[in-house]
Length: 217
Image 1 (cartoon, rainbow, N blue to C red):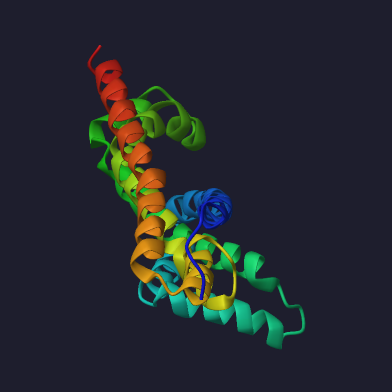
Image 2: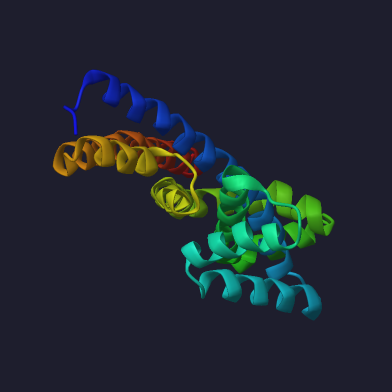
């Protein structure tokens, strides 16, 4: 056992980089999947709608920790081990895709029906109609829950510690094993998570206010 030192604080901060990278790439991967899922959910064809519904129910109805286990150990059993980082990234992306897809689907369908009819009356094809008329209005609706989910995703990266990936929480566990000062170490870990998440909430509020002002003009 040893004392908690400045080098340990540096170690936690360096580990926070991996938390940020995992969150960022997980959100990007989940965003791509989420947009696809949202478009499938509003499709006029029943097949893509039911595929999207099954995907959402599967990943929303099972724990993220279990999903990480399935990706990590399942890939290894199939003979192409992904390693802790790629397994965590894939698991978080698949999970985020289900939640973001449902958030964005709800935001798109929350756009008043008159806007859809007006865009159709202008003779716009389906995808230009979405891009030019529906998506800009849906963005204002989707922003708060999307940022709220991103904050939750940053905190959910702590589950990657279970499969051996050394992010912020895992770094705290390692330091606690060496120093046995749980209050100091995990208090510091909690503070770093707060520092990472709080600016996201502030940025969301400012951007939401700007979009609201632009929408009122």
